Image 1 (cartoon, rainbow, N blue to C red):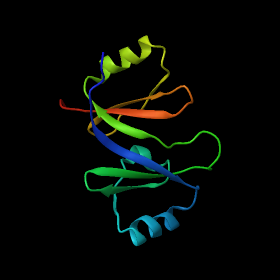
Image 2: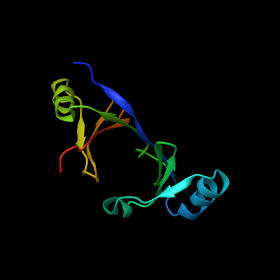
Image 3: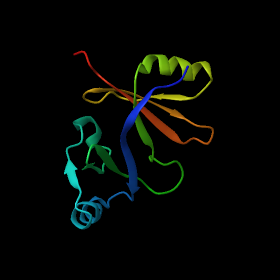
Image 4: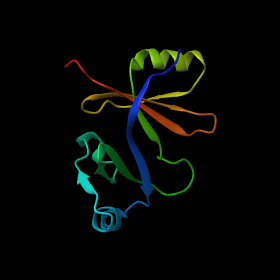
Length: 124
């Protein structure tokens, strides 16, 4: 099976916990990026989201040591088939909480780098 990647959905950049105001000063003030609303379910995680043309930049917060939240996210087709394919190859999967308009799952490479896959919800 070949996974059909459609486009890059977002990237995440991490800043130290508690540095959101300084992050907004840099990314919104200096770089001129537009802040957009995060889904309510994710607001407790801290950070903020930005829009750059048709790609989002997620500014996450974390103590910058150990495992990171940084990851690419790709939109795909047939996410359930992709999940089965990854599991058939003993790839570790993390079931992510759905957010509005998307099903999500993440998987990890051999070095624990997280890669998120997203599929648009077309049926309500």
